[in-house]
Image (tube, rainbow over the protein chains, first blue to last red):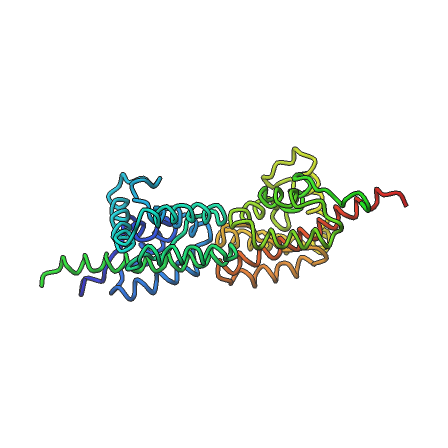
Length: 179
Length: 179
């Protein structure tokens, strides 16, 4: 990483962080990045200022529903990067899953369906470290928002998820370096 | 209209005012309306609070590009209500067309393409009574906005167009009444 002109990212690596092909293209083109901070700063600029609303919708549609395993989502898991995204998603939801009861999962499933019906995309939340009860409470609260407000909330949550995953890419890289 | 329980609207009539099928369904279900004010108030509530962002995108895609005749747009003009929408659109752009020069039309076409490329939908403006130079200036100004800001601006402009067209529906109705 050091001295080598920074970390080059491929479109496929970025798509595992955020499922918009337009975002992935722009990020890959903007790389190499000297460090994670530089990558995150560029990612925020591209996500909020450059890509259009269709790119946001494409990214949202690449997530499994909260409380569902990613294998049951419709996303193709044929590529290794899709498998990486699925694995990361599972890890991000591990706190929620560990604290779940059948009744909470049923309620989550019900409110997820209501949410999708109202807003036209699935409920997105950066689940990392949150219990399933917290997620359910947040889902019920956000359900009352106007669609355009919730659209921007979802984009903010997607950015948090993207940042966590970029950090994983960079730390995986660091581990590959000689000590 | 009076004494008859108000003005019932069909989905087809509403689609000519705003090209979202979800919006049209909700408005038709909410009708009859006692008067235009009641219809506009309901329309604003449905448009901003009820229908999702996909409905907004569908409505945006039903407009011809500003400065282009609607016959060259991709919307089907097979139904009489599509023809009504095309006719209304032409009327709304009449001030702009009357004040156009070839060079302004060329510049409009160029900036329309830039706008669509950046935002993923066409530039929408309630053109009624505006000159082509005013429209071009507004297009250039709005081009600098963040995608999410422009998405909401476009929705506001769509609502203004919807209100003008609902007024036409109600005034056409009034003309049919005995004096």
